[in-house]
Image (cartoon, rainbow, N blue to C red; front, top):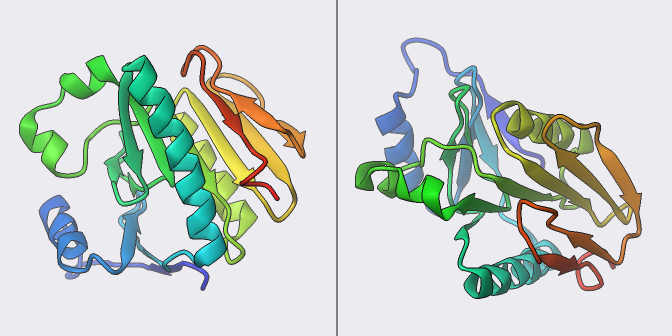
Amino acid sequence: MTPVTVNLSPPFELTDEAFFQLCQSSPEVKFERTAAGELVVMSLAGGEGGKREADLMFELVGWNRQSNLGVVFSSSVGFRLPNGADRSPDAAWVKQERWDALTPEQKRKFPPIAPDFVIELRSETDDLDTLQAKMREYMENGVVLGWLINPQNEQVEVYRQGASVEVRNTPASLSGDDVLPGFVLDLSRILR
């Protein structure tokens, strides 16, 4: 199912607290909120998408446990970006010192921080243009490195702060560059 965007206008504007409570009271539904305050209702992943996402998380968490450089987040976490949007990448990573600078309350709710690294994994129902716009939004809000993995086209778009998007066709792996030193994601279980 394609995500549904609902334009909420007064008197139905969601405060930050009301949006957080909506998400907490409806854990079976994934919500995001655009910078304009629109509510985005997203569907659950199918079996193939969920398997791919689990493989991604396994690799990222394994690297992070060895490097101990930051904190890994799943798609169930919403981040409050500087532009006011609440976004939930399929996988995210934040440097430890940036995470540690947040208050306990900020860590408990939607962290008001742009991750250092994000991954968006395109499902069969995801619109590519929408995901590309989301990746640009991440970069405009301070994300340093992002990967848009597109199994349908066997492509990966690599987004780097201050650089043009790099499109890779059927790559065997991806490197975390200086952002995730030593991290190499094997794409054999994800792209095929």
